[in-house]
Image 1 (cartoon, rainbow, N blue to C red):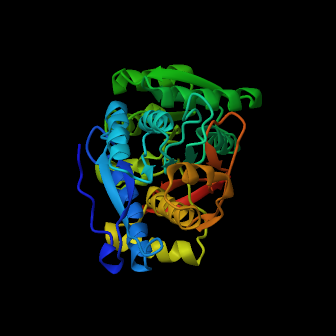
Image 2 (image 1 turned 90 degrees about the horizontal axis):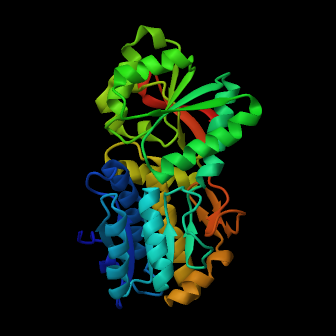
Length: 369
């Protein structure tokens, strides 16, 4: 469970370190590629803070724990990190894992700034201890539904697996599409890919959304649909963002192009976003995903809070409504959003993009919310 903290430029500062606990999926069944990008953003920002003198001369230190997409493991990590004296906990990509971490952080009185998970109900009850950068699922997925409607796609099938995240996403889509003439048909992703294709034909679906894990069963489903001549006109979509990462393109090649997904980046980045994007590309050896920018923005927010309000946990949590930080994707402020129990940035930029079929390594913007 323990992942040693990476060097963070602490040699440029003096004094005892200020520890930040970082929850990141780095091994299977977690989405390890997303975790790698998230950690790259977190670590880059910590290096930059320390290179600039730290927090009142004290270095930031990331104490990284691999959640492996396991909620119980994440909750246990929050306990351990609290005992280690972290000023706050940051990170996590998987919504069900972030929910477990948020509940434990709330119970222990540890500030948790969630970087990347989108489930609306991140906590069962409203809490002062948790804030979030990623847009809520209901916000982003409604924008995705608007894209489908604009493309004339109203007969939607979803291949889905049992999960509160996928169930919530299906509900968002159905509630938004139904009043606008759209229908949502749920198909069990445990069907064989061939049986799934038959069901799509039988129901006359014009779109198949992959509300499933990657690479299994997403990759075999895409291959089956792409090779079925009856489904030549169907649009495959993946609102949760599976095609964002290079691993998707490596597994599917041309078959993985033309599959729209959500990402949380502006169409044009400002000078800060451009600079950070260049640094992240050098670290990762590939184009940074929106998740890497979420990581950088997370530390930028915490560094500003720690400079202004100190390292006391209660003071950190009390600062959420007063945050005003320039992030890589725009000015970040937190507010209370109806139906969401945590302090929320409303909202990070939202785009619907895909991999260009003519050039699968290039992402093209199809719709912006």
